[in-house]
Amino acid sequence: MKKKKDKVPVSANIIRNQEYMEKRVGLNVSFDVGFREIIILKKKVQLYYVTGLCDTSVIQEILEMIIEINDDESNKKKLPEIIENRLVHQQVEAVETMDEVVDQILSGLIAFFVDGEKRAFIVDGRTYPGRSPEEPDTEKVIRGSRDGFTENIIENTALTRRRIRDERLRHEMLKVGERSKTDICISYVQDIADQDLVDLIKDKIESIEVDGISMADKAIDEFFIDRKWNHYPLVRYTERPDVAASHLLEGHVIIMVDTSPSVIIIPTTFFHHLQHAEEYRQTPAAGTFIRFIRYLAVFLSMYLLPIWLLFVLDPTLLPKELSFIGPSEEGNIPILVQIILAELGIEFLRMAAIHTPTPLATSMGLIAAVLIGQIAIDVGMLSPEVILYVAISAIGSYVTPSYELSIANKLTGLFLILGAGFFGVKGFVIAFLIHLLYMVNLQSLKTPYLWPFLPFNAKAMINIIFRIPVPYANERPRIVHPKNNYRQPTKKS
Image 1 (cartoon, helix red, strand yellow):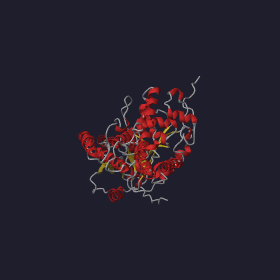
Image 2 (tube, one colour):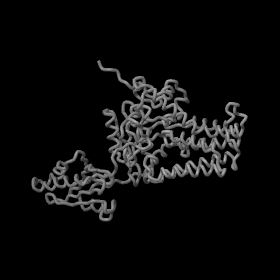
Image 3 (cartoon, one colour):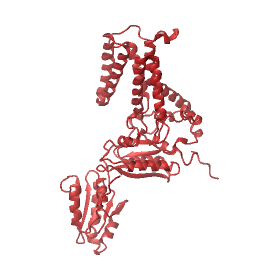
Image 4 (cartoon, rainbow, N blue to C red):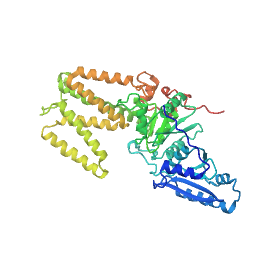
């Protein structure tokens, strides 16, 4: 249980409030904590803010309006009411505790204290540093919107609201982190999303006890997962507002974390991680074809190498028509070791590409492909067939829309390779069954991970296999338990 702090009330003595701010937020020590004191009708008025998080023009405009009180007003007793009316901003709130004041200032708002008043006025003049919305690198489409979520949570809610102009769309703000006090927004459509699911997510977020979540959404993700060492992603990430809006209309809940350009979609299944916006930007037939190719690529990324290894170790498993499969010459290193070395080499390249500046990444790829690959073959370290199949498997992992799922499938593939390499067909079958049973038992917030395959739902499975035309996709997925299951309301007479 979280310990409740004794809340310090705003004092009518403005000097005490100033002393509190000096101790609590480092006034006169931290250079970015702004402070200004002015005299209005012979009373002290103080304002506090954090430079870099506030719009300077808003502060200047408010100060000008307040200073004009000396020329236009004379009633000292009604000074707090006069100041409240002169705060020319669309969002002004009065708070009565110093803890609230500190939290709001550190979030980028402006706090006003009036001598003799037992409350402070909070003005929202935030302007967070960040970039403009742009298309995310990992979710590009040929046609479609080019905007994407940013590190600013206010912009992200606006991008979602722009696509769902429904009065029942809810954005509820919470804070997590004793020190970071990170803003977290829970988004859902009130008459669609399951209220029990919304309450469960709120309870999980409010129960988080941690100093801070500097890793933003990923840290929140790990508090949701019951199996901490599970390698499969149990939540879906997206940086596209259109994808987030589509899931909101299905009954999912979106979690936005300030400072992160990606949002969390809950709950999700294995097949959610195989979807991509490009499928819905093409015709249903083209979208279905793209989906089939993607499923094939994901299948190959996991099973191509272990199955090929089985054929190499036991050629009798192959029919005569496929007897050409397998290395024509035995290398200096066992095939299993070659595969492991090649897989590690691919991971080295992937990690190097992430940390290499873009202008050098192409050169690095050419060096790896032409020099390292060819020399490895010439010296007998790797056979050409190993490089071929490892490359196909790697391409399949890159085709996977979800980066988290591609890494998980890579680990699964290595597990199957080791099973086949050490124990042959029996080892592969046992490893495959262990993997299948493991995934059957996985759940994402009480949602079966392999739904609609297990438990089987024929109608939902058709929607997974084929890209159904939008007019016919008129039911929301039952797995999220939506309040309103029918997507297209009847026309009003």
